[in-house]
Image 1 (cartoon, rainbow, N blue to C red):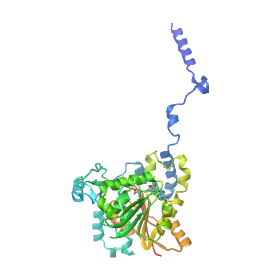
Image 2: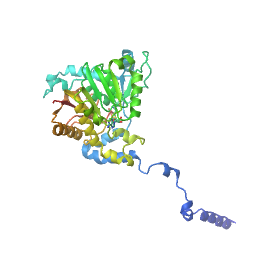
Image 3: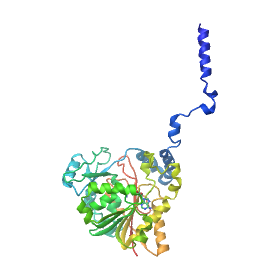
Image 4: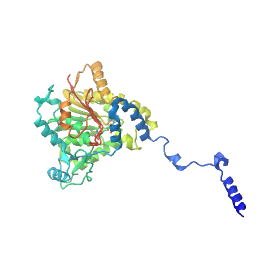
Length: 384
Ligand SMILES: C[S@@+](CC[C@H](N)C(=O)[O-])C[C@H]1O[C@@H](n2cnc3c(N)ncnc32)[C@H](O)[C@@H]1O
């Protein structure tokens, strides 16, 4: 009896030998058909391990683990709502306004305490911005924004480091401002919050993304303010702006498309490390140079430009700044000066971790105690 059972089991196993099933009758497992063999997030990490370990040396392991961990947010208070009430509520959560804290620090450490004194305009902060963050090491989260009593949303949640390029732009009352790559619109909203824009042109090549920008403006900025600041939203190719409106703006923000390092490690969707987007990724630095050059051409002589990315890559940061400055000098005989932001950096170093050795500009590096960024920004003055 036992021998019979063993034989029939053996027969069954023989019939179940899949190696003998003709190839055309075999079916692939479903996951193999739907999931990419090399997820873009993994390709991004491989790429970063190769390039950033060389670029940052012994700092890279700590930046890497921070990039892979949950990021921290800041709550940009909406000045067009009941901002004093909202600020009090945020303080009750134990969050602090890092902009106000930096201003207080600036008053304690006046310009005279610096070794090389830059012109005040080079580090003057855009006014009226309030952004709350939890202190170093506190990983609490903000509740989602709500509609406030004045009919607009009470705050906007963003990577707090994204506010630094807007602060560094140093808006003055009555400025004409261009935000060349504006969508989805966190920085455009911050520019409007300063109350300084005589008019604001917010542009982005992507019409679907300018749609998102419009929604943010409707949710956060009352109609009369949008009219008063003459907000104009367009969907043009920013590279052509120099030809369209040359020598026009007092302040220009050039927040370019980049490898969006944190996003690329966490999201498969719209990930620039997808194999099909290799070419697009390779030509990014060239596109960035063209956009920055267009931004500089659109600036009035004497006006300021801030270039920014959310990438750690020197190729997309410092090299682009140097490339665009050379291009303007050689092709247009236009002189551009890079502004020293070391004093600006000192004001904010309680809140953010800065890379200590940027040749030009400043770079916020992710850190487990203050997990913001990456955010690179460089301020330039168009001299001629
Ligand atoms: C880093 S995002 C801008 C983020 C935005 N400043 C913010 O704070 O919400 C870069 C943007 O550049 C836009 N872009 C890409 N190529 C462009 C071009 N040639 N001209 C203008 N915008 C472009 C992309 O559609 C994308 O929305």
